[in-house]
Image (cartoon, rainbow, N blue to C red; front, side, top):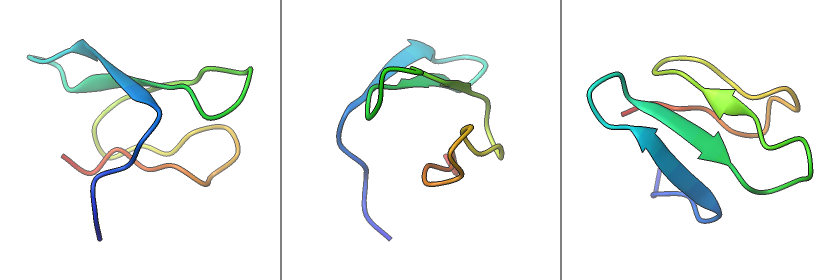
Length: 43
């Protein structure tokens, strides 16, 4: 696996990222997947 493009780190301590791949802009916690299930926040 490789690091994804089109995301923004929201909270480094909690590991929350914002996916910028689509207009939904999901906030994804560590170990979770986005609404579309195409993105997963592993670490």
